[in-house]
Image (cartoon, rainbow, N blue to C red; front, side, top):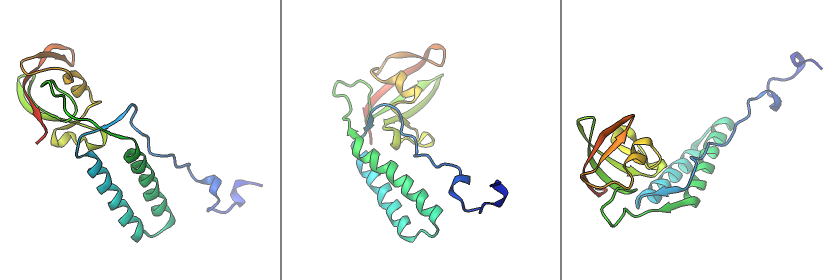
Amino acid sequence: MSVAFRREEDEEHREPRFELPLPPGPNYVTARGPALIADRIAALEAELATAAGEEAIQAIRRQLRYWATRRATAEVVAPPADGSIGIGCAVRLLLNGRERTVSIVGDDEADPAADRVSFSAPLARALIGAEAGDFLPFAGRDDALEVLSVGPLP
């Protein structure tokens, strides 16, 4: 039978909806990460209760599956006790001569606009393990980063 004679709502004509991709590697979070994940799940459940239309409901359920997986796999990581940079640290640094303070957080906690950088981001990978006073290579320059101070997240 020709496709022209099939109904529009036939499932085989719809684009497949894949699950939301999970970031590769471990699901490290800061101490506040589990609460942020729980808040996101609660907001989605509230949204699901008032959702109209099968497509909207399926989209919310898809997000709920993602966040449920992230909750189940979350590993809370404490900042390093030795003063080096790691997840859960606030780092004041000079990046190409410009002072900046960034927080190293889990993938789902990241917000680059608010200077919360995922531990898997290139800047964080360059910083992890360093200490105050270190000069580090970044973006093709040997001394692009200078670590000014390291402390716990505010």
